[in-house]
Image (cartoon, rainbow, N blue to C red; front, side, top):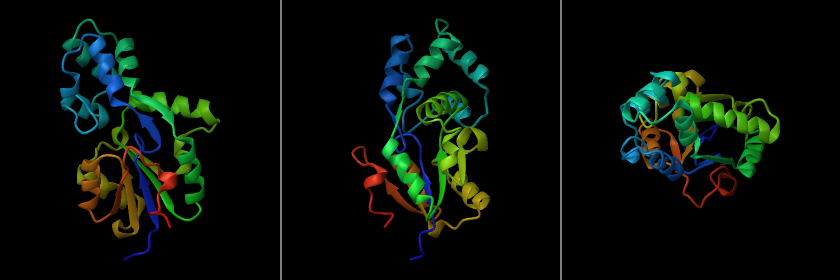
Length: 205
């Protein structure tokens, strides 16, 4: 087996606590019907997929959501959409500082311009660093690169852009669908379970 040289981390559910039910409940409370058919941890409808690949602006996203339910506003949508974002896992972030001395570290996240603005603000307020990206050789956000997990094209893009080899790379994610995408390009993988934390894993030894 090739020597492990690189580690790619997912964000939500790995370094940042998230609760998809909070967003689903928030939209339900706003009167949005069947929100879970629009978006959940494992799937996204066309509008939300476009938001996460940067194919629509946040203004276009708000307009589309309001067309589905005219009682919504940009402010209420933003608040409900961000409800899933909880606290950063500080012990997991501290581990990154140690791992960065030995491995090339990368971030690969399905996210969007609204969520990124929110967690960037929270991160800076939390520890004074300018950006979460400082922990990584490079961070890859779906809405910036125009690609989205679990599709294999985003994994191929990262490998080529970073100049790293799949067989020397470990991918950690909390979604089985995304793990399968990484396996399909030859990466090592670890599916992070709900009761696991990266700082307690033995895969780095």
